[in-house]
Length: 161
Image 1 (cartoon, one colour):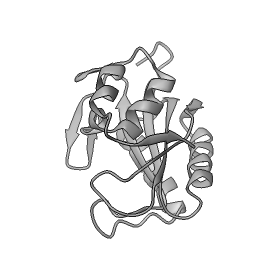
Image 2 (image 1 turned 90 degrees about the vertical axis):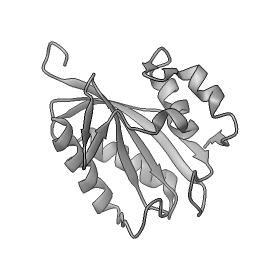
Image 3 (image 1 turned 180 degrees about the vertical axis):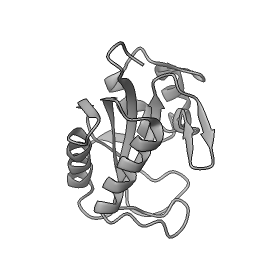
């Protein structure tokens, strides 16, 4: 937590149904104006093939925010934004209109049935690591530095949108 009582959080955004680019940008805007959120910075958008799933390519990005919300309240805010965009969860890794995931929340380590922080698979996903590197190039995850982790994901296609 910073001296001002806020935490820095990183949130992954992705969509592969409808106008995915517009949806990701709209979701970032909606998060930016959510109560308890300030200072949102949006990474560039990237196009990537689905990982462990089928369907159209995804549009992905990461935002960095300052928030006075606790992690569970932030999760509820993200789920409300997903719901506004028609997010359905028919099965694991189903194509989606919008997916918002808390990647990091300050130094928090949470492992509950409804929330795991840091996100347990972000170090294996180029579509998370590349935009995260755009926002925080010196960030080091428990698994290593972002350039090293990205090199381990070299087989995953990711291109600027």
